[in-house]
Length: 114
Image 1 (cartoon, rainbow, N blue to C red):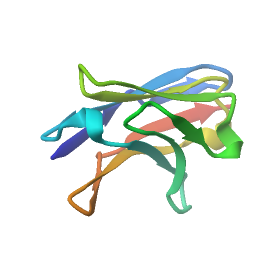
Image 2: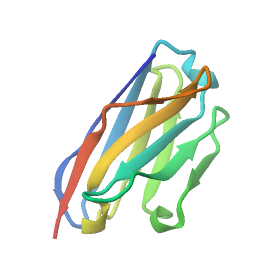
Image 3: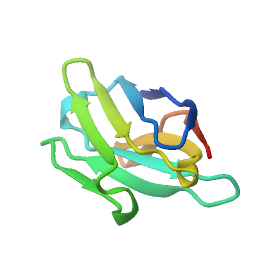
Image 4: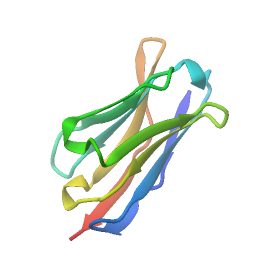
């Protein structure tokens, strides 16, 4: 079971990014997928998730700017981030739960310059 996150980069305030998480080794369509982020010097926090049925949830701080989606054919989860702010600077991780254990992608760094 493997998750591979990509799509991060250095952007300016107000720009957008789309993060991607590619899953392998699982029947992707039956798994809930989550996105977390860890800002420099801070703890990792959950920011968004999408259920196997396609229902999305977000923390209040990102509602209206973050959009989580999935493509079950290509076994990918996505996190669209619009109107990026410096406080969005973090390593972003995708996560799911398999056989009772958390599975994490390697993280992708998003840096937002002011």
